[in-house]
Image (tube, rainbow, N blue to C red; front, side):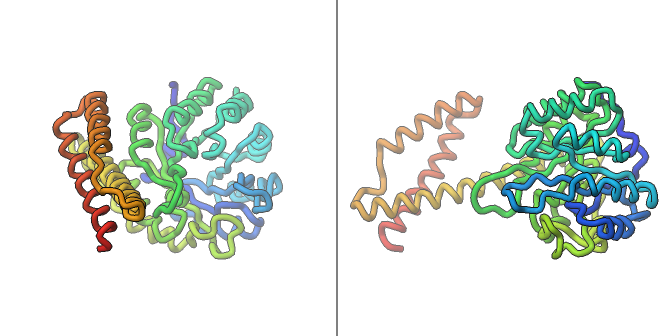
Length: 353
C-alpha cells in the first residue's frame, strides 16, 4: 500500500488527540465544547453528524444541518474538524463543508460493499481518512477496507481502534483485544494508529486506564469523546467526559521512551498480559460450566468422572497440540490440571459443599 503522512498529524505534538462530542447536537453545544478545547493541545475536533444506531427511534444525528457548525469551529477556532461518513452522500456534503478529516465507523468497515462505495466517492479527492476496526475481530476485513481506499487513490490513511463486540457480561463495552491493532501496526507500520478508549470503555471511569494502556502500547494518539454536559448527551452519555476531565487524563499520561529491543519486549509483554487475562476469564467460564454439569450429574445420579469423556478430550488436545506445533506432553500436563480442577468443582456440587 502507498501511504503518505497525514499532514495534520505530522505537525502535531505526540500524542495526537482528537476530542469532541459523540454527536453534534446544536450549534451552541458544538461551539461550547470546541471553545473549551481550543489551544489546549487538541489536534482535531471530532463530532458525529450522522449516527448509526442499533435500533430505530434513537437519536441518529442532526444530519447535514450540523456541517456549518463544524465549519464555524474550523474558521473561528482554527481547529481541524472530523466527522464520520457512511454513504457517498455524506462524503459529498462533508467535503463541500470543508471537513478536514473523515472517518469510517466500525459498522461500515464491516461491509465491503459500503466501503467500496465510499472509496469510489473519494476517488480523486485528497483528504485524510481514518478507518475504525470492524465490529468483529477480523483483521483481514480491516486491512481490506484500507486497501479499497488506497486503491481509489487515498494515500493519507490512518486507523482507529475502538474495540470489538463480544457477547455476555463484560468489563468493557467493546473488548480491546490489543493483539489485533498491534498486528495491523506490525504489518503496516507507516499508518498512524489512534485508540478510541471511549468506545472500548463504555463508561468514563475506565478512560484513564485505557488511554495509558494505549500509550504503553505505542499508539500514536487518542480519540476521546468530550461533552460539556455528558449526562444530558443525546448519545453515549456514559462514556463522555467534560473538558476538564479530559485534560486531567491527558496531563497524567506517562509517555514512555523505551528504545530498541526493550520497546519490542514491552509491547509483546503487554500482549501476553492481555492473552493471560483472556485465559483467566475462559478458565473461569469453563469451571462455571463444569459446576452446572455437576448439578445435572447430581440430579441424575451419575458419576462425576466419565473415563470415555476424559479420553476423548485428551486425544483431541493431543492432536490439536501437534497441529499448532506445541509440545504434546506439556499441553497434556496443562489440560490434566484443568480437567482435575473441573472434577474437583463437580465433586463439591455433588457432595453439597
